[in-house]
Length: 90
Image (tube, rainbow, N blue to C red; front, side, top):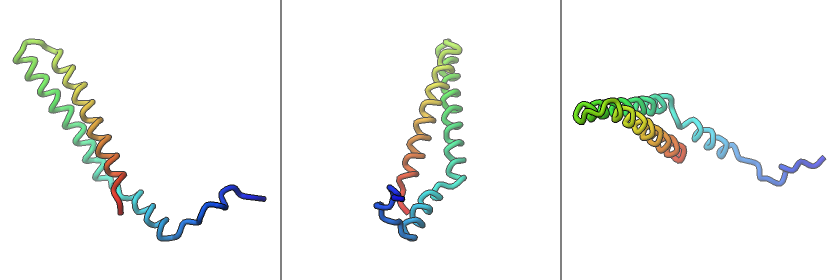
């Protein structure tokens, strides 16, 4: 019986090792750092919102807006960092 995948070249052991090494390149500490950065971004944005609300007397609108803005900035930063991590070579 013909296998449709037989016309593809076989991967060498060196290429398989290189691909597996690249997959293992992201460590747990890097993920923890991304989580801490995400949390810190939200906390700093919330504190800035509290300060603005006290300064302008608009409680709680700036806190709410800044928390959502901080979360958006944190997600964007997390996305950039994770996509950038995947592009690194061995």
